[in-house]
Image 1: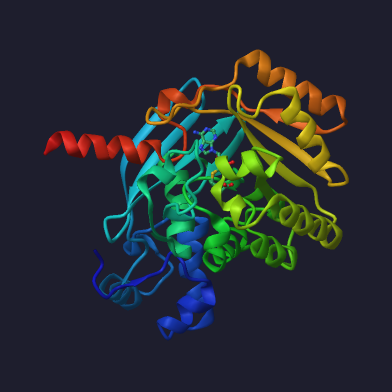
Image 2: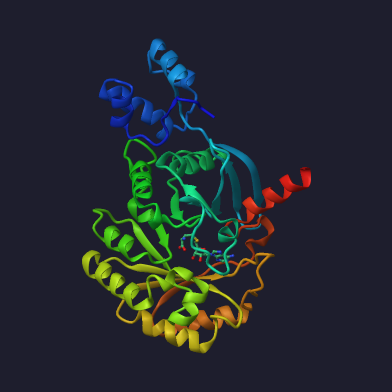
Length: 351
Ligand code: SAH
């Protein structure tokens, strides 16, 4: 969409300066306008000299993605946004509000190659990796679309479309952009990367010099069931995952979050709970239980509220801290990939 124009959203201040042959302070000024002040219009960057503003207008764009659909749920305090990227690919992200807290849920890939059995994203197949600007751009555009005051420091979770550890370098670059003190300055502890459990990604993540949080989408703690729900488990079985997490814990001392999407009769029984407790033994674990968001094409059923609570109590009794997410993202199609699927249906019906 932007031809050969340089896209600035994914560049650090020093990269902006280098790519445009500017002074370092000018790179920082441009970065601050974009990331700290959320100003994307070069004309409004009033501390830049007029000739520089003119040059930027000719040679650059701040971002080359746009919002094509927004859905809001007052009840959930959620706003879900569908973006179109420069090549027509579509991704989605969510802004969640809870009291004064704002959480941004970002995508790391357009589509996803992992095909988890209960997830809508996999149904659309894998399209491509996102670049750092497309990842951080979701955060900046969500904040402005949601009119979030600049002084609010958001939480960021990489739990939208795609597998962050299959796009490792771009995800890490986007985290550095989000944390930059002259930009959004998001605290590392407010950022969580969620992975299906790609073990070499976990090993690399352990070596990053930061406090960014790691979350593992476990969903089952026996290989037979996990391979069915999360096919990537066939490449990286539970024993390998357990070893990678033990090493990660030893190296970083950090707590690990585990996500478990509760599916009726599939992974919500007392036996599943027992297996999970065995897997978690010795790890500094926190568990995030997620009621399944129904996906029309898939035949799973969400666990009953009673089963969700029983599962949670079982974990708590074993001394593991948990959260049980609120049910029913359904009214804004909050499950992964669903907004994109909806939009495609609209397009089909227009033809
Ligand atoms: N690929 C990464 C991040 C994206 S998915 C990962 O697997 O962690 C974020 C979380 O939402 C994962 O735990 C995923 O299993 C879960 N999820 C996907 N579809 C869901 C649905 N329909 N209902 C509830 N949770 C879902």
